[in-house]
Image (cartoon, rainbow, N blue to C red; front, side):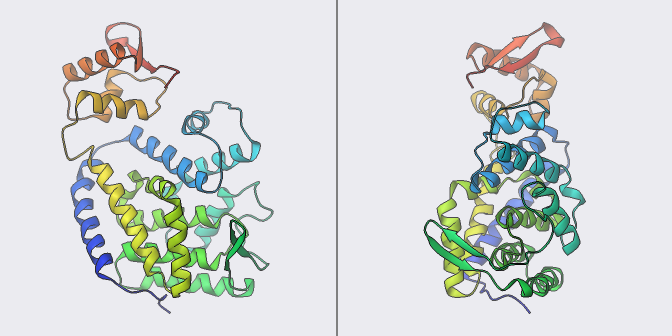
Length: 320
């Protein structure tokens, strides 16, 4: 069965806007190697998705863990991040339309955090927001066939994948198939569904905007529950995706100033990089422009330089 939702004027407007933006950015990003952008996206995605679940680690701490460095922090929070790093490292190996793959992702994501990761729940659960019960999930006996129907829907229904990915996210949250980790799985799997058709979504950490609009995220879930359809949640998520693509376009659709390039480079949190690495991020600038940028970055106290001439490396000041 097709889950209940309506195609509203707002949904049509947002999907049109998103498709236009996808067309603008996909050639720029997919025709070029973007290792640092992938890395930065992974850091932002992990930080934002786990922050929603109460994880306290900063982007800098997550960067350190990705670089195999030890940090001080809550053991559970560190384990959540290490698990997420492994999952996002393997994101291209998961099959968007496979329940087995879905379970395997949960097994990696929640390993050491729940008793039986990768297995559907065998108990009744309710979702609590604050002091109130926001949602009673369907009986656990219904979970296997509800999830089977949901995967059949995203595989066989002819509605646009943008809409289906949002519907999957909502319906999975509603079914609540696992004892824990459903929120992060919903966000992960929507990305995997979208990447299956639009690989550009590997570069789009829309979880960051979900984290920044967390109140609206939960409000749209609640409103969809009350209306018994996912329309409000679809509208919310499409708006998030549209705004995230707008942010991505800032770095592919216009010429950045020196300061904008330096601020963006600093935001990546790279421990040490060369002029060549800098030019990998900003591919449309000349060698002389890159040299002037980095000299300015040192003068402004954004970077420190180590070494001479072609062997010069740049690092961020600790205060940043």
